[in-house]
Image (cartoon, rainbow, N blue to C red):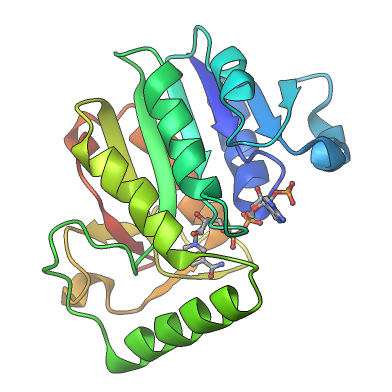
Length: 216
Ligand SMILES: NC(=O)c1ccc[n+]([C@@H]2O[C@H](COP(=O)([O-])OP(=O)(O)OC[C@H]3O[C@@H](n4cnc5c(N)ncnc54)[C@H](OP(=O)(O)O)[C@@H]3O)[C@@H](O)[C@H]2O)c1
């Protein structure tokens, strides 16, 4: 399987590169030009397409011939970075490709998630601070996933709980809705989030699903 990892140089991205290589996949990584050095450990194992992930030409070239695309959706800046990234992937990936996008629990597909009060308060604060400092736009990540949910591609949107570094605890459990006691722990090791993303590529049960995940 040939897989493109969009946002390969970040923490989640590098874990995904490792999991994909372990599975024997051919990997193409997209990352900002200044971050190519962060992929040095993989230099002879993957191809790298340097560029902003919302650059449509960069994405068109990177996803060419790929059976799967793993996308780290990040709402940096105030210029539609996450939605531009998602749109480019939706437009240029092969129609039959598996597309797996990352985001957080705050994204809701059908409005039926039941969030802890503290979680809602934290998202409100993050939205306010991100906008005030013009650093990040949470609403753009919401727009990005809205476009994915509306698409008829073979997508999965993986909604991560709070993330922790550390040794693997095994593949996270998932639910269609936050509020399900199964995922109440709200803690996932980043390495396991990455494995869930990569494993979703060949899990047809997750096509057009937005699993909210947590470590057990
Ligand atoms: N952090 C959490 O607690 C948490 C919780 C739930 C879900 N998530 C989701 O998990 C995914 C990964 O998040 P993460 O927090 O673990 O971070 P991460 O994996 O380190 O990813 C951050 C990404 O943002 C890029 N980036 C950094 N600064 C940027 C800038 N100024 N302009 C454009 N891109 C920039 C990084 O690229 P470079 O390598 O080029 O810097 C990297 O690809 C995201 O989809 C997030 O929504 C995170």
